Image 1 (cartoon, one colour):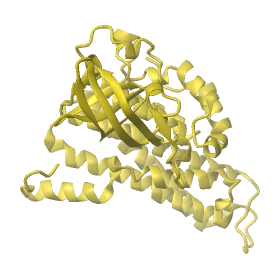
Image 2: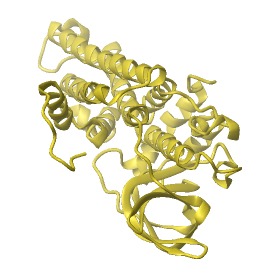
Image 3: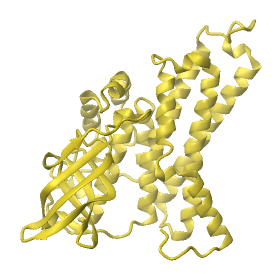
Image 4: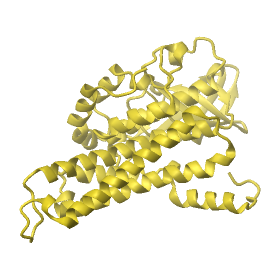
Length: 359
């Protein structure tokens, strides 16, 4: 199993990161590099030519990729989640066509944006699924559907769907997280199945697909700040000849570095636990709080980095502002929601019985 992205892959992603944001979708060169490097096969079952990598391996890989291009890393993470859903939901399928190419890019949505009507050949699906990362480049989509009254997952070729380009965001623009639209699409019976609850291990894996790119983005921002400290730049309106001469600047650099390192440590600790232990419901509030804190650490770190750069850090030509926007948006994904993480942990610690029907 390959545990680290190749240097070539990282350089390809870094070279095209600005173009990815401008085009609002991953670059073809970056997708080709990820495919060649086995990234899209990380959660393809081994029986179908993939590696079925564990949560720790996936977190490390996505962080490495996110250090170069957070948006492309995010799309790779979405592929991990979608393939995990497909593998779990269709575990009994014999030689499923959707895994014929282990390196195919998957996308998906767990929001039941469509309804299905049973017909003799399967289910006819109509609906809209917003925020589907990588949908313009994926081959397959795993989509939540209400088939009658049953929450189900359907596997649909993206060629059968329409992309409505609705993704207009300040950050993570390059993920191309547009809306997928189905209009009376026939899904064969063997490609739609009733959903079952996710295990906590799977939910933590899903969290890693979000946190990994965010942590990588914070590391990429820190790379830019370290390069600034190594340059001849100095704090404006001071007598210092270099940034490193300022005790305050050194302090802020130490703070930012500590926060990024703490986010990495937290991410890997949770990923390792999800990879090696059978988690129980009692572990959920603690782990969700941990990953939310890691996302918050990334945000706080990048704020300190921008303090060091001053207003120049917000210039559109400065890579730091792109990392800042990607961290700001990515770290606010529901998997990293800080106030609900605190709420749920407090509820668990206080032994409060939740109201009926609350998830």
